[in-house]
Image (cartoon, rainbow, N blue to C red):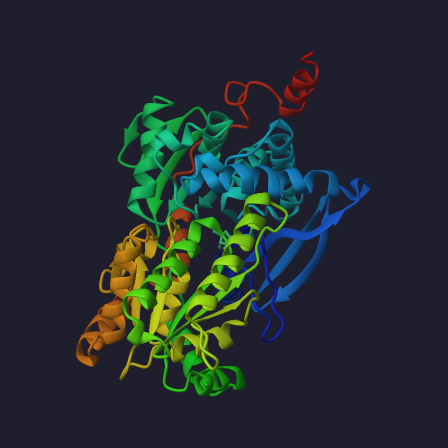
Length: 484
Ligand code: F6P
C-alpha cells in the first residue's frame, strides 16, 4: 500500500531545527517510520508561469517529503485570506474575527485544485490519500474530479464548532458538501464529531446511519482519533536534554524560583492574554510569591501579515511590559517572554525544568504541548499540568488541574494549588496522565486512522456532481465584479 499524506505545512528538519506547528511536529516521526509520501506547500511562492508541479522531493526516514509551489497571486488569498481569516476563526468559535471575501475563497479553491493535480502522479492502484487540516477541505472533491477512486481520508486538527458558528462561515454549505467526497473524516474528540454530524443532519438533511452518511458522492464515515505523541521518545529526549547548555542555563538562572512554562504560537485561540493576567493576579494576591515563581512564556510569532495577529503581538508585548514593570525587582523579573521557536529537544529540557506547565487555550483541537509537558517530567518529582478545559487534551488528561481560562481568579488559584502540591499528589496525577498518553500514542493514532481508511467500503465514487457546487468559483467572482 502506498500512503500519500497531504498537509499545507510540511517539515523536513535538519538536526535540531525547530518544527513549526503541532501538525508538522506530529507528522515528521509518523512519515519517517511509515514510509509515507508527504505532500504540502513549499511556502515558496512561485511566479504564475510555474503554476504546476513538484518543486522538490527529499527523503525523510523511510518516507519522503514533496513540496509544491503556490503562485504568488493565490497564496495570500489562500493562506492569510480564506484559511486563516475565515476557516481558522470559525473553527475556533471566533466568528467575530472572520474577515474574508470572494477572492480569498476563489484562491482557496484554486490552491486545492492546484495541489490535487500533481497528486495524480502518485496515485498507484494501491494508493490511499490522507489529507490534513482546514487548508484542504475540498481536496477530495478535486481528486474525485480528476478520476481518483482510491480511498481518501481527512483529519481535522482543529476543533469543529457547533452549527450556529459554522453558519457564520461564508460558503459553509459548499465546503461541507464537498467534504462528502472523503471516505473517512477524523476528529480530535467526540464533541467535534457530533457537531459535524449535527450540521449534516440539520443543514443538509442527511440521514445518519451509525456514523456513516451516504450521498450521491458515496459513503462518508465519521470517527474520532485523538492525536497522541511518541511518549517514550519524548521522555528520553527530556532526560538527555536536561543537561544541554540551554536547559542548564535556565535552571541555574532560576536561583531557587519555581518555573511555570507556557509554549504557544502567538494566536488568539491560545488565551495568552488571560494567562498573563492570571499570573499578574497571582503576584498581586500573593506578593510573597515574588521571586519564588517565574513564568517563562515562549510565544512563537505566527501569521504576522494578518492584522489581528499583529495586534495580539502588540498587546502581549505591552501587557508583559506592564506586569514586569509593576512587579520586577532589580535582580528579578516575573515574566521571561521569548518571541522565537526552539527545537523539540531544547523544549523537552525546558519542560523538565518547569514545576508547572500552563495551557490556557480558549479553544484548541488537542494541544500537544500539554502532552509533551507531561511526558518530559521526572517520574520521581513530576511537575503539575494546569490545563484549559477547552482543549482536546483535557478530554483525556482529567488528572491535570483543569481550569476555565476565562476565569482569571480560578487560573491564579490553580497556579497556587499547583505550586504548593505535595509530591505524592503530583506523582499520582502524573501516573494517571502517563497511562493515558501511553494508551493513545502517536503511532496508534496514525495506524488507527490508516487501517480505518483501508477498511472503508469501496462504494462507487463518482466524479464531481453538478448539484454539489452549483457555480464554478471563477465565474462567481466575475459575476460579483460585474455588480455595478
Ligand atoms: O490545525 C492545527 C495546526 O495545523 C497546528 O498544528 C499548527 O499549529 C497550526 O494549525 C498551523 O499553523 P500555520 O501553519 O499557519 O503556522
